[in-house]
Image 1 (cartoon, rainbow, N blue to C red):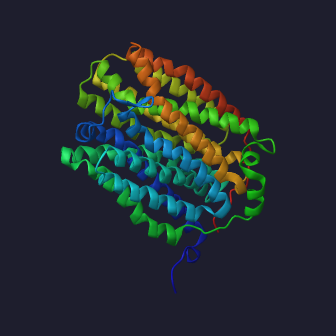
Image 2: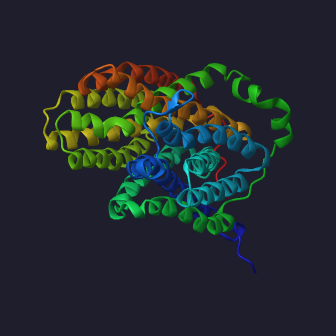
Image 3: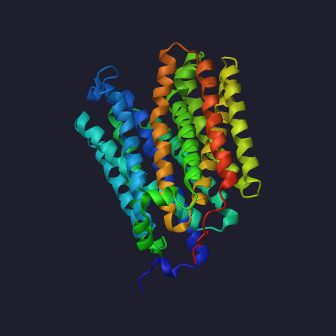
Amino acid sequence: MQASSETIPGHGRAILTVALCCLLAMMEGVDLQAPGLTLPVLGPLFKISTTEKILFLPVSGWFLSMSTFGLMIGAAIGGRLSDLIGRKWVLIISACLFGLFSVGTAYSQGVSMLVSMRFLTGLGLGGALPNVIALTAESVSLAKRHTAIGFLYGSLPFGGGAASLIAAVASAPSQWPVVYLVGGIAPLLVVPLLILILPNRKPANDSKVAAEGVFKALFGEGRALRTVLLWIGFFCGLLIMYMLLGWLPSLMRARGLTPPQASTVQVAFNWFGAAGSVLIGFVLDRGRRAVSTALVFAATAAALTYLAGIPAQFAYAFVAGGLVGATISAVQAVLYSLAPSCYPTRIRGTGVGFAVAAGRLGSAAGPFVGGMLIGAGHTAAQVLMALVPILAVSAVGAVLVAIMARDGGEAAAVH
């Protein structure tokens, strides 16, 4: 008899579903870090200018940002489609898209093709992200939801660290396609497992979801304030995260570290970030969600302040960079774990998808905010401290959502 997800016991299928979602999230982390890692080689090779502008962005900015723009659109579309036709096949199609177009990036023959491949890769990444969040949330009990999503979000910076290692091993200029090939072939290899293992629950109220529309799904039935606060939390949180991902090595070099030391601090930022995401998931599942949310934001502000004030020595920078990575990633894990609780199962994909899109708008803004502050002559310490008020705005949104959200829908555990 042909194997299918229905032949796997419920508990085992739940564990495998979460594991596959974490694996895809790790691959997303690889792909999202790849442009920044390869730009130093691709810049001279493809004549990607840092000064020549198309519209308001340098050509290099378009290359770095196109996957983010695609991700915003893909998250909104993929989340909505998952509520209408089911999460499994939307996720599988999304994984195929970002896998194929990541491989396509490796074989690009010019700037136009390179930028187009990044945008199309972003569409697939965006379609996958709200679905792995929703599937993870719906595959475990409410008592373990935050832990599962902590592991899920921790997979993203873990993948980013893996991308850095791949780029370090394949360091010759001619080997730049390797990171894109790994980031593309790996999800394609996982697709057969997704087909075999993922539950194929069809939406119970797809006609109702289609009839009520996106606006009502997001803002109807008393969800308007919760949705807006969630978007604010995501936007500000990811603005800080991606400003640090883009500029932390430069800020550390400005403090007197050597380029290898600054890169090592960035690795600490990613790897400690994975650990922080997992830890906060355990904490949130033990109750007092609003208090835990407030504390993790306070810890992030303290870590940023510490990083801004440390002496220009590698040991201090390594510890401080790791602490900032752990706390800011924990902030993101909190937001990702709160989002599914804000919406009932029938519209969870739509709600989470638009929250992810709002966050990715912040992630696109982050590097530009950093560039503006540095261009205006601010010191590294001043740039880091400028993030604290933005963090406070995100904290207000997240804490209020934590108070208001009542696990807005059943956990729909796999059986």
